[in-house]
Every structure is written in C-alpha cells, then in structure tokens.
Length: 184
Image (cartoon, rainbow, N blue to C red; front, top):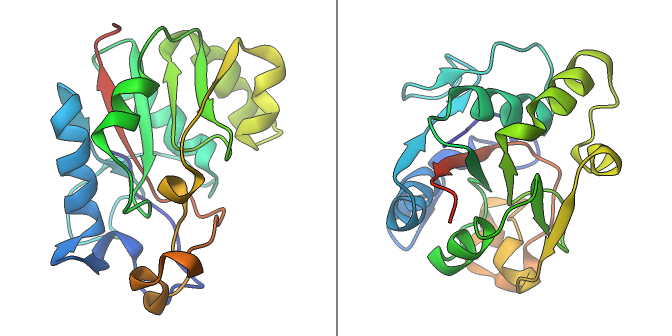
C-alpha cells in the first residue's frame, strides 16, 4: 500500500479519515488483503503516524508513489488503490490484475490501476525528466481499460463528503495504496 499526499483541501490526512468505523488506510489494507498476497505502504516518510516505505522523491505526484511501489514489490504486477477510494471493492482489485499488459486503468483515470514492473523504465524516466502525469505515460505503454462503476473510484474532497456519495469528487490527490499480486 502506498500512502502520501498533502490532503490540503480535506484539512487532515485522508488516510486517517473514518468511514463505517474504519480508517481509510485500514479499509484499503482490508480490501487489498482480500485479493493480494502482499500489501506495502509507500509514501513520504514521517508524514503519517505509521511506518511507510519512503518514496525517496521530492516530487509530489502519483508517479513517485507508483515508481516506489513497483521498485519495492516482490511480484510483477502491482495494483495501486488511492487510500481515499472508500467504496473500492475486492472485485475491482481482482479484475485489475487479470491479463495485464503493462498498465490497466479504469475509464476514470490512472488510479486506481494496475501496473507491471515492465513499465518501470518508462515511469522512472518520466519521474526524472517529466512529464509527471501518469496518463502521459500511456503513449509509451500497452494500456488496457478496466470498466468500473465511476462511483467506486470517487474520492471525498471534504470530511463532510464521506457520508454523502453524491458529493465525492475525483481529486488529483496522490495518497495511494498499492499491493502487488501474482500475475494471473
């Protein structure tokens, strides 16, 4: 699992926000743990009250977390889940890892998504030289689309929005969780 990000509009770390009595980070761990054999936490060291694998980057962009997660993962396929997607399901995680070329992403954007380690050279080059937007790497990778219910990937932009599904927004915050899975 990768976590990091400023949560500036939210006002506090989204990883610690609660829904149905569970923090977002614990919920993401549970969802990923149901489908994956490894769950990693990667982000900016020292920003949250739990240990993370430091992404070792000054860049605040999702690509930094994806690169760090791919480097740290034991397996060839890594499913990245934004910690602020509390409506994600194990079924989406399972479908994301199937028949993966180099990248599988939903129609809603690059995250949540699955990335193969074979995409690492392209992503490392882009992290070092830009552009940093994950979707810009698609032109160099074999990417397939994963159809999901857009509400599943919606993310709350305020604490009040957590309980109101209609108020969830698709923000560009890069707090993400990842897990690596054996290619199936």
